[in-house]
Length: 318
Image (cartoon, rainbow, N blue to C red; front, side, top):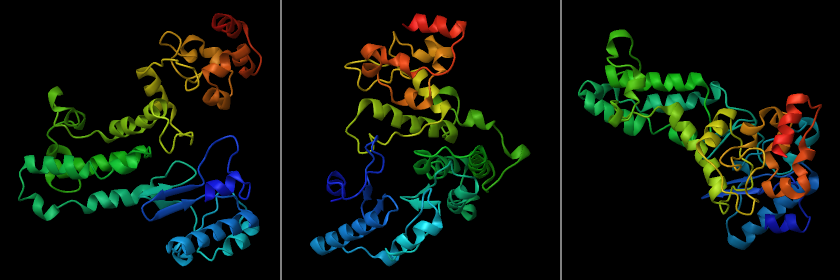
């Protein structure tokens, strides 16, 4: 219904240049995105009411919430209030993930620490040998954060505090252990057993591996529901991914001209780093090989004044 309303122009498209779905559905959790305009809000409410009458699944607006993203409160608030649902500020939680417009802060992720700490069976710890505590660390304390690590890069402080909880329970049977209680360096503990470790997940590296999976899927499986969302990744995650992969061009529609390693296993950034720095971020992220090679359209992406070294790299790339 929302897709059809957008196609007919009844609801304005969120971003005309990107195919962002206006709705996310998972079991009984629904998130809607729309422009804060009176007409759009009224259409959204009408569609929800129509769906309720047709299916019998009525929306309880009193249990729903509305959140403003980059809007002026005084102009938009009366429009949102017409929905009849409470208005809450970011961050909000959806499917167990705190949603924000910026990277989550330490304070916003403290509930994750509380959740991990609450699973510590302190009163049982003294009845367990170290092998039993090790299994609990691997199967419980290391597993709880994985859901959020799939999509979030937590602050270093959060990762250190999670590691402190794991280390404390393993060596001392409590939330924290210091000094002589820790018999082996944690980096060694986090190694695979085949490399002399105990097989405990290094949460920082595990999180990076889980998040770079989305980069892999975006290149290998376009049928996924989130394929057109333009997922964001840190510079470190992208560098790790591009250093570990190379791209077979095919028809060139799915290969990024400036970012992917498509020139004999190398990227333009590796061949011409100074020239690459002259390309605006939007062009680097969006320009495909088939677009760039058509009439040398890639040359139009270059901005700024080129020096001698940049011109040398330009001629090399040409």
